[in-house]
Image 1 (cartoon, helix red, strand yellow):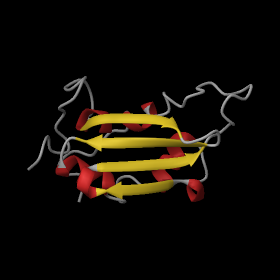
Image 2 (cartoon, helix red, strand yellow; image 1 turned 60 degrees about the horizontal axis):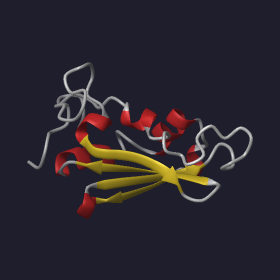
Image 3 (cartoon, rainbow, N blue to C red; image 1 turned 90 degrees about the vertical axis):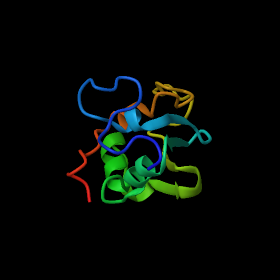
Image 4 (cartoon, rainbow, N blue to C red; image 1 turned 90 degrees about the horizontal axis):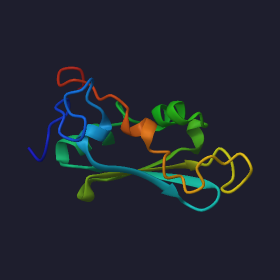
Length: 125
């Protein structure tokens, strides 16, 4: 087993409430991918955490679409097992720098994903 196992908190805030993706990840970040797209990356601590977030029965385009209120057909997911990374991209809700843009660099878009609770050990296949 590499790193903490799913359902066992290891990161900041460990032990305070349900275990989240952010607890199992080395880093969860978001950034601009041009003025029209946002990209988020889940850098998992080890193979077990990666296996959880890479599993479409836990995290897929529909889950991401629900968190960010976007069309699931526009969500792109890239699973990179050799790096224990899942990369997610989708169109920005508003164009970067426009009047209604509240996060010009998309630096805070990762928060809902990082706070997503993970299933306990017996709850996930």
